[in-house]
Length: 166
Image (tube, rainbow, N blue to C red; front, side):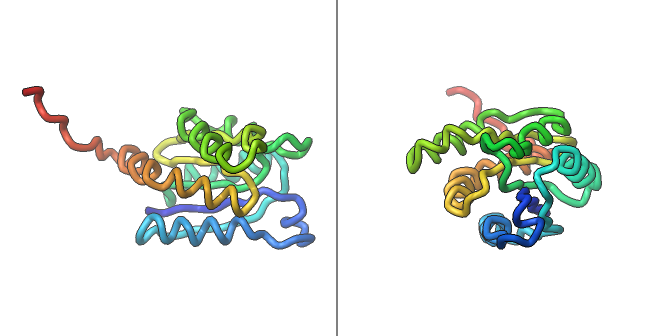
């Protein structure tokens, strides 16, 4: 499974603060996807056009199965990751985003403010995560089993036949 990580942060992009979520996300995916290969990790500013262009190019390149973003999902004026992601998606997967928020609500009421979305473009799964390292950890814990299955389905593996009723 090939993946890319995109951190969205004006401050990290400008070198004013370290990106802690992107490297954490990469480690969690490498471990959780067992043999998963990070094809690229990048930091971009909170710029809607730049984010949408990068996501579309990565999806259309055919060299990754999964793109996970971190940051830009809140209510701040510059938080535009969901809007940029929605521009490039062909199909949304609301259940994944709901699971992220639901798991987060067990830890903090602020999780309800996250606007991240998930979906597909072609055969690539795109997932928006919040920007804090604890939220990245909590989100990945809940999502990894579903991500594996989603990637199998996108690769054309329709799963096992269901048994005939007795």
